[in-house]
Image 1 (cartoon, rainbow, N blue to C red):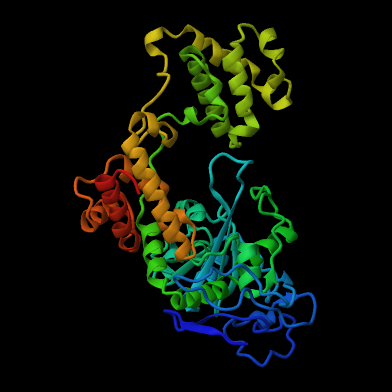
Image 2: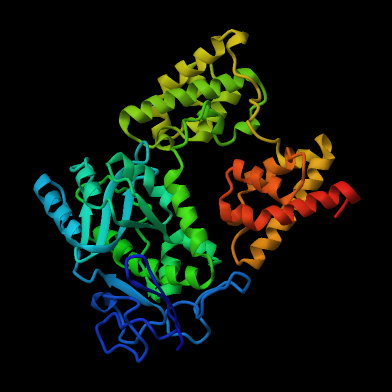
Length: 478
């Protein structure tokens, strides 16, 4: 089968392999096609003895059809059951960490990194396991609870490209332990730019490299200690083929003329500062749209703040302390006595009743607030109103939004990627709501850049959007 090849920045050969071109994961004879594009996979343990088929054949082009998965008749993907060097022991003390630092400093090429959190179990989004893999160093599993300072490892990897999948999910918790990438390759974002319809790690590894990853423990409580062997195997396998996936996607991006776009996106991720805390996080309580008056909003705020305090002190996910639905019911019913509170359906669970006196105090405080201290019913945002209100508030803006959305959707289809990756919806809305005085390509492009669009995004979209806006001005329609 034919293959498309590109050389990565670290000298690795990145390729999108056609069916039958990935080495046999059981260690059997490689196929006639070049197997070096997925180095080392032959040492991994998988079921079956047939050569695995890689994902869809051929690299997508800027104006061609996006890759949609394995070609018809390709060999079935092979389950990957064991890391090629086995499951490494968890690094949990300073001496072991120093050995890992030395090994990874002596390694070469990109570094695959992943982190496991305990979302839904613990307060916040801290990492409870950090996985790394690098050529020449193998795989390391680090316990960041026992080794909370990984700045030494960060220094050893200062010049390395870090490979993450869905980097925005892991970068904050990695920064908490001192790991801050200087160069990044995000395999999930690369998949989006290439038009893959499913960009989860398991889907990407299956469709690009032809292997099946176990994903059964992604929602586990990773704060548990000791971590079960099956969980550690799953964690190690998450980075087992991440560099190989990076190499293949790097080749596809280059062949599709999208590599510079991707590199600009990766750099923008690293350059984006952390989001500031929300001014009123309690307003994101699920179901708050059912609250109709300011007094009830004050109860939502008071109970939410009490829940947050208890959750933080007990290091529990807030939803495990009190569910959002219970907060809304307390606000709607405003119980005055403990008996009233206990009679509410949302208070029948053991977790909710454990702190029932605290909930009643929170409700009472809100009930006693003077009117001047009640929260506003609506807080104006810093952007345009919801799009469904535009036709009434500003019909011309509504027409511009329709035109801009049509332009972006068409360009996204032409370039085989989701519209939101071509131009963020918020940027489109802001441009349409407050357009530049002059609808020229250069002026629209400058405004897009001011609103946060990347250079490549503005270069693709500025002129078509400017033309659409100009047609509206001169003809009143498209």
